[in-house]
Picture 1 (cartoon, helix red, strand yellow):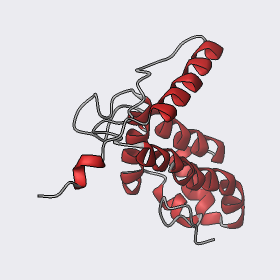
Picture 2 (cartoon, one colour):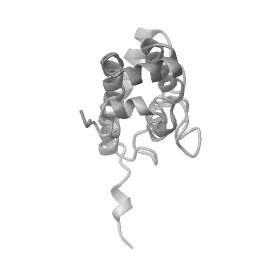
Picture 3 (spheres, one colour):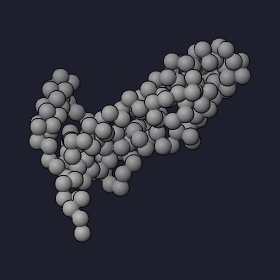
Length: 162
């Protein structure tokens, strides 16, 4: 028997106070909030401040590949007539393609999917990241996946082939 799990769950009160303060200011600025405002910290979902920091450090790894594709679509379509035809057949225009990617991400990247139950993935702050990672795991089945690959996408690790 070891004590490995004994020190795993730490409440991190300073980080918790800080994050809840940021969240309260944001809610006051926008006038409301959709979903739970729970910030998991010191529980089974995010057992300590190191897990919390790592979880939020993943956001650029999710967003940068998406932004890379959105920025490259115009040049990709103009440089390759076959790609232009593909975009026209599937999406109509490059702008519609961009909108399809963004609409899919915003619809399914924050829908509460990706965990065993609503409390873990649901609509809490941390659950939205779980849902975003779940969306990332399904990108190979998306109609625009080939365009991601043509733009140099190799995964959601922040690196690109181009």
